[in-house]
Image (cartoon, rainbow, N blue to C red):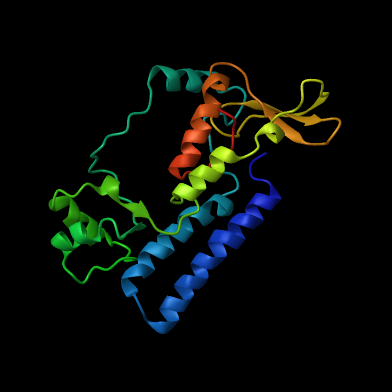
Length: 225
């Protein structure tokens, strides 16, 4: 269950190692000290997933947690737009689209590519700047989709995402802790390909939400709309 070995190696190769190497170069050269904290926190946020192997990623920690699950449905989580008890993101970066507005508040020393510090973010809030307009820099959880990325996604061949109608599927395991609900993993007898089988209300919306999440830049499974 969880990430496959290939995906873990890919995350290390494409994100974790390049991020820590970039931070190392900046520290050794003594350049761009304002970026050190943002890079360090962004690295730790992704790395702690592997450093805490016993962490429970969903409410389904065990099969007998029915009462807690019911409580979660009756008392849903609420997210406040402004919550003084929560810290703002520490990996927000200045981009070409917003540098002029940010400079009006923070000064002309702020350049494109600058990682905003906690103090600078607080100053932006005092200037009534909408922080939701800021994007994270290098991140293992999100990346900015270009128009070319979106067009390529829409043109993709989705036939391989599903078994054929006459395929024989064999049961492998029940995946209790993957994603937001339990699912069954099956294997296609003819090709050996693995598939996740869901049921219930989530199966009707998961495809659309997965695609929307991907197009917005979040890590998500590729589905068929």
